[in-house]
Image (cartoon, rainbow, N blue to C red; front, side, top):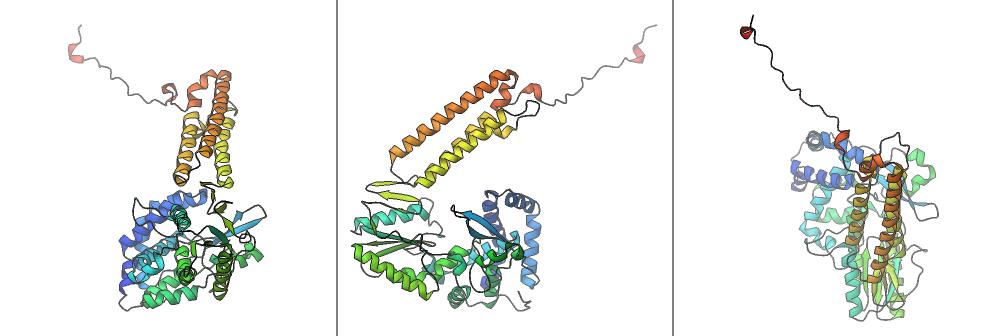
Length: 434
């Protein structure tokens, strides 16, 4: 960012206040500490040790124009089974804090509310109240409402490589028309720019990542909002007339009164996307028109003839995760007896992890109604828990002394006690008898 000695605008001042930056850091921390990447978790933990000091430094440098945005790392996250990948961009933590602070400022702008809160888009939208719905549950509830109004025909589609084909300049123009503050827009530009430090290692795959004006970083807190802003006019146009179109980031569902109307609205969508230099994925958008009776999938939810349930992939992933948790503990039970058992793989922590996994999964899909599916999953889990308990019992029979260790219950005998010495009374020389 260029150095500026002028008084900063209100949006810039608000974005770079220490409370705003700390709030942004709290969001970055919460997301990072839950990451599946051990590297990301470690970086977050290390940053936390000096977070207040670094945040003060960020504020000072961003306000005097000396802050330098570090380069990001492009990561190829496997996608599907055909060797494809998602081009995820991992920015330095300092950049992520500023991205989140800019996002928070954009979300507070009254003039941008029409782009943020719409009845047709559900991805990247903050829940409006603690007891309200958002994201996938809200999208599914709106789809069911559309069915009630007689829209029985459905066509689903997916925008190809959405994030990497968003024009930053197009979104910037919309935002700058609403927020006329050059210093804030300069900060925005720096936050959405992508420069990869490992571009050479990525080789030809580097072209799949954002570059120059084309594309926003998948992995940035700002990207979902930018996508929603770009497609605001698309959403509005797609919901004119007798059809309804809902969108979750790059996933689209058209609901229509007839099969013909659904196909016509799909062709309209293709034309509108073409104007934005976007297109539907041929593979994911070729399913044609379906109905509520024949069934369809949207956002990982299968809806068919009265049933609302997680799709087969979601069910399969849950089963596999339960197995992985139990098998990791089994493996620890059969380790070399000369090595101590790692406490996280003991029986009680293992069963607690299984329970937490089930609770999290159920919370995500609690709006679904296929009780037979949930009963079968309970039976599946109970069967594997019984088998696991059998493995525990067999291990204890082989090594009875390790029973408490296998359970994960501390043995007082194994504590490294450091007892105080009981004081002894020294003889008093004055009382010595001769």
